[in-house]
Structure formats: C-alpha cells, structure tokens
Length: 395
Ligand SMILES: Cc1ncc(COP(=O)(O)O)c(C=O)c1O
Image (cartoon, rainbow, N blue to C red; front, side, top):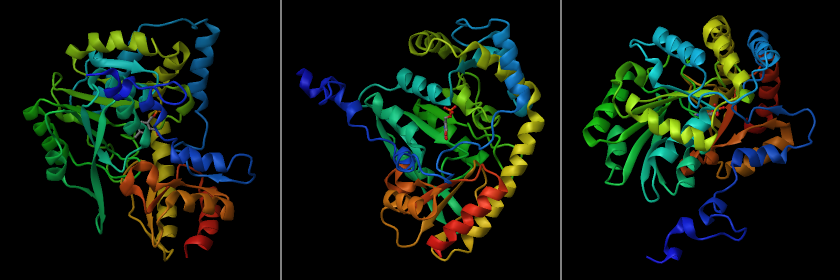
C-alpha cells in the first residue's frame, strides 16, 4: 500500500496529520468564543461547577508546595493517593478495589486519551453511547479509530438505550464499548441490569468495556450511580475512568484516575511515562484530602445541585417550545426546542439576545441536533435570572 493510502500519513495544509487538521473545533467552544468580551454573561455552557475548590483542599496543596513537593512522581501517582483512592472506592462499592489496579492520571481526559492510545489502531472502531461529550469521540478519531454511535432515544420516560441496537454495531474491528453514565449531556443513568448485560456481552466477544464514571457522585435518585466496579471481576477487560473535577470542584487541577486489570498495568505505566509522565505532585496531595475528607462537601454539593436541577427543570417545563426530562444524574438539562434545526446558530442567537451561554446539542453528535445543553452547577439566584431571560426566547 502506498503511503498516501494511509490517512494518518497524509499531511494537511498546515503540515500536521490530515486526520488531526480535519477534526472540527468544539461547537461548545465556538459559542464560548462568540461571547468573549461580553459583559453580564451567565455562562452555563461548560461542564464546570461555578464555585472554586474548597479551602481545605487548597490548603493541602499549599502545604505540599511549601514542603517543596515540586518534582516528578511515580507514573501511577504517589502511593498515599493511590491508597486513599483504593480505600475511597472500597468504601463506596460492594467489592474491594486493590491499590495495584489504580493509576492516578492528569485528568479524566488524559485517562481517556491514554486508553485510546492503548487500545485503538487506525481502522478499529469504538461503540459509544450517545449523545456524548465531544472530547470522548475525538479521542477515538485522533487515533484513526471510528466512533460508532449507539443513540439514546428521548421518550416519555426520559432517555433510553436500545442494547440490541448497540450490540448489532459490533464487528470484527470493534475494540471496545464506551459507556458514559451518568451521561454528559443527557443525565441518563444506566441500570445495574443493563451494565451487567453489556459486561456479559463484552466478555463473550472478548472486547473491552470502557466506563466513564466521572459523574458517579452526581446522582439525584440513588446515593451513587450503578458502577462496573460493583460488577466486574478484577481481571475483566474493564477500565473505569474517574475524575476529581466534578465531585470536588477541581476542574483546574487536572487530576483523575482509572481502575484497570492488574495485567494491563505495565502497559499503562509505560504509556503514562511517554504521555504526561505523572500528574503534578501538589495536585495529587490535594487529591488525598479530597477523597479522605471531602464526603460532607460532596453531600452538600449534590444537595445544592438537586435544588438547582429542580428549579431549572420546573422553569423549562413551563416554556411552550421546550421538552425536557428531569435528569437522574450529572448536572445538565438537555432539552429539545420545537422547530429548531440549527442548535449552534440558536445558541449564538440566545447569547446575543439574553447573554445566557448555552451549549448546542449538535456538539454531542449528529442526533444531538434539535437539543440544547444547560449546565445547572450554579447558584439558585443566577439560575433564576437565567430562566427569566430564557423565557423570553423559548415561550
Ligand atoms: C463525561 C466526561 N468525561 C470526562 C470529563 C473530563 O473531566 P476532566 O476535567 O477530569 O478531564 C468530562 C468533563 O466535562 C466529562 O463530561
């Protein structure tokens, strides 16, 4: 085969890999950029809590810096953090999680990229539950892989996944099924039964199951989202991705972790070295405090988001052009707008008319078109004002 027949070897106009040059800019960012420099914006476009990291976590990082902990650490992260995470997970779930299975990563996003680097060859495909956060899709494309979308459907009972349709997409080039539950953007939470069915299918077919559980703690109907940690055996081909970003308001610290089979760890260790080598030491020290002492903070935060969710959904449901379901998890309202055919144009329009920043549904895959995402991780006061402004557009 000539080099030109291999897509990843053909350069684009800027001389970079064509495949990478062809990747579109995130449509969420596009709306964000349109709002640059505008005053009085209520920004509900990004998936980010509106409050800074709590003081007790910041203090742990400040103490770490004062001790001079500014050097490289082990690829998998410092042992006290890996132990703290293993303890935390063992406390939350029904199975003990061994420290040997934990790799601390420089964010949930790094964990995802790492797993795509480890699993996906050009031409392989990954089946993803969708609508889905665009970064998870692009991580597949960057490797020359093909994301295949198993679409959640919006009905009277909320969002629903057709597992048979998902299984029908699997072929000889499928490397993994990627589930994101609780889901960004829909707030859908997969049941234990469905997780078990997918796990059984993956075992039978010998494919990997990647589970993005970064919103595991952000649940409103049950204390914690059903997890593959509860169901999988330690040597199953299952990798669970978590993050400090959402539960402890630590988006800027770039800290996450993954739980993987022990047999994969030497490969991961090698890949972490060549990827980002290790997360920042002082971020890791802050992470220890977060998982050890952060339970009360997580409980209070979820209670606050539950109120925010109810306020936003109650108000949206009164707007005639909008159809929306009360999400069971994560911190987004993902609503359908009657008659809307271009969610990106609509979000830019809403921004200019109301100064409320929203994310276009089209950013989350083609069938996200027709929807808009609103992040309700904000104060009730700000959300009330946002709803007053949106009412004028959507009534
Ligand atoms: C589903 C999902 N996975 C992963 C992440 C990444 O989180 P992190 O900040 O740890 O990279 C996000 C962030 O929005 C997300 O929504």
